[in-house]
Image 1: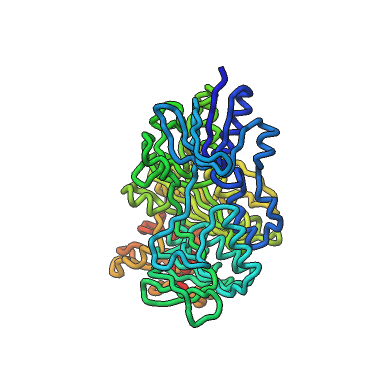
Image 2: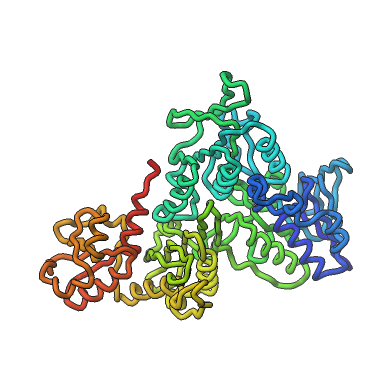
Length: 554
């Protein structure tokens, strides 16, 4: 007997579930219900179409109803919104543009409603010229405004991924852009000591950042002939804009489930088990609307990313077809392009670990993207977070080249429950145009392994503020020229190559804190001093990490 499967919503999760299920079960009756016109589109590519990096709108459309019908024999019904679910009687109530309101029965149901932009109750938020970006219709509306109207100044409210991508693409169109972020920094997956790289790049390309401030109200600027908007900030400052993009965040689009028996979390996310099944037998949920288990912390969370949504759709289809597939959690691997810079992260950051009161180590390093003697090498700023036994908890990186593959490798090791020792043992591709004989991933492992094995103790730039001046000495082991060009206040200069002959200048009753430019010479100095009886710490990431930690927008 064939199964009847309803799939609510397309895009990543729903479309993946539909295609996978058909490949597994040729006899199943599959009906996809999509509220909007487009069932599967590249939502991650929308900002780049507005910015005209992607020239052809058709490139955003991954699948059409006609193509899904022809290849997969799926009954796709667009402009069909599911407004209620009856899990006991296994029916869905649908409001359709063509059919009116009707009921459809099912044997299995896959919920993939996604998430929608947060629209807080800010006075004036409904004014013309204020919009958000979720789907093709939003994209068309924003692009039409940018193409046809004299948009000179735009404000992006929210410094998350969509907000920063929109800021970049509007700037590429020659529009002045200001990003307003209520938090102290943009891009929450990155820690404070790393995010300065992104903020510096935005500033370099003319994007203004307003941090630690929120929007109090929007009003129409009556003194301007066009539909210009006055943005009143909570600090009392005001800004003017021709266009406002809301990118404050997203929430699960699950209001239609409030009266059903589907269990929802505190923030409205659908609760599922490892098989992506809800509390109702035969009812599955996938994508941005579900609560997931974080792969590293094992805590419940919500991580709206396309990759996990695709995997979840596939797993839901497997289980409907009788295959026992399980979803093992989301680790939050993400990447972003910011003009000439790339940022990537995976796993947990320091804020997440601190909230869990979990102890951890941090190392910073600044390797080159490939062998420095081969033209075109550029620096990568990397951060590795690991526990006291060496298990990798997370990683972050910024750079112009080679960032993606380094974080991808570390993300893979995390997935395999790997340790920093595993990073040292990885045999990765090497030729001068692509890497170094000691790949940056290997280098991160070496540095971390030294800490786990207690061959080195490090300190972070933030630790300098609490340094006991009476019981520590701060030593710059770079060259005198480097020291004169800029150094940490309170440090003395003893180059590493002179260290053995100048040990009498150091106080053996004090802890010696050493630093160099990126940490390597500092480690050499640490090993020399430790073997001469000194208690030593090395600044991880060196003076370069120190200067980035002190970057300000002013």
